Image (cartoon, rainbow, N blue to C red; front, side, top):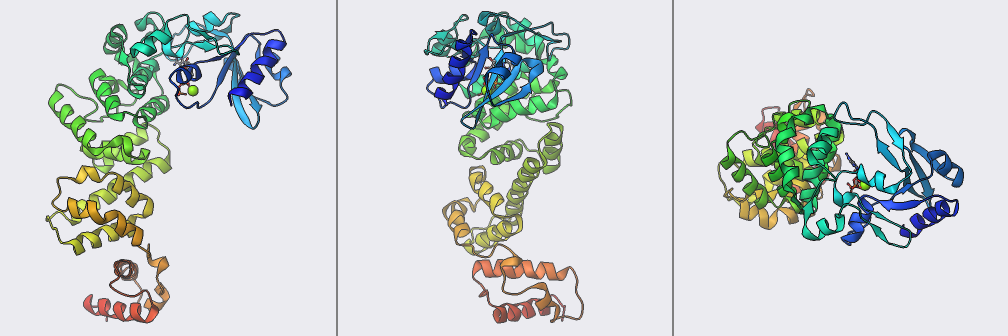
Length: 424
Ligand code: ATP
Ligand code: MG
């Protein structure tokens, strides 16, 4: 990837322009982190860039960005620019192309994001980004209050970078966040979601949550989130208890949906509240419903076992019943979240066996049974909702190994249930 970026830069330089790798790439490279993508800044205009390369896509012409496709990969090439006045605290009224790298770097948010690297690997670092990285400090380029006033989203980015790169937020930046939090009200919920998601999915989500709590930023979202305990008033003890629960839950080892589900579950949000919060944050339907399903399966198991059993057979049946009802993905997510369940009297049995039980499960629903609704229909005078319930029960029985998954055995079992349920 680096070689392709260098080819692009050499082409630009050969045509008489300047070109540098900038932003996140330089930061991550200095930290020896895996490279995600490489952004290039250049003195060439978008029209020049489109003329110089055979495969380009005009992805963000109004911002001066052209995507150059090289070896099947896209590189964003952006003309050096300065941002015009910010009147709405979220995006510049216009962008102006400039001819110095220095000016382009000075519009960037944090010193660690305001470095460039030339084609020979030489680092250009006018704001001391390297020094801040080495010292573990997250510092704004220029005056923090001014930078957050220009774009309120930067306050959330500040928390995201501090959490994900384990940096200390420099004191002027932190004071500015405490002072200017209300500017978050100008920011589209979608952009808030993107930053929160990157924080939640990052390497230290609990630190992210702590900073969000302490900053009280989420009180000020454009659409009020009402997401306690992330919006603390003076209940700092409750927040500490929540963060402890999150630490115990082992968030960083989970998939992203399980992380969100854990945040809501430990925060005491019922699924309705979690649903509302995710809708306000413009989650995709797929993500939102996946998280809600994981929460529901978790709730189902706790409820079914609430009497405090330690009977292995009952724990297994409840678990497999839930897994069959909610599906494999959900079950996997609840396994990831099992550290939230350590206080339950059945936790040890569950922890020891649940994963293996799941692996052994070979009937995942009525569709895997050797009989169908039609077969059941021949056993009773009328059809009805009992049929779905019976098929599900038979699937759980077969999954448990209580009945063989063979037509005659299942039909005999079905008759027993129907007699028990007064259907025959
Ligand atoms: P990552 O892609 O790993 O999340 P990144 O630093 O590349 O991190 P992007 O959001 O992709 O972050 O932005 C690329 C660069 O653009 C940043 O490094 C920064 O220099 C600049 N930048 C992005 N958003 C802003 C902003 N709101 N204000 C100022 N500069 C920004
Ligand atoms: Mg990036």
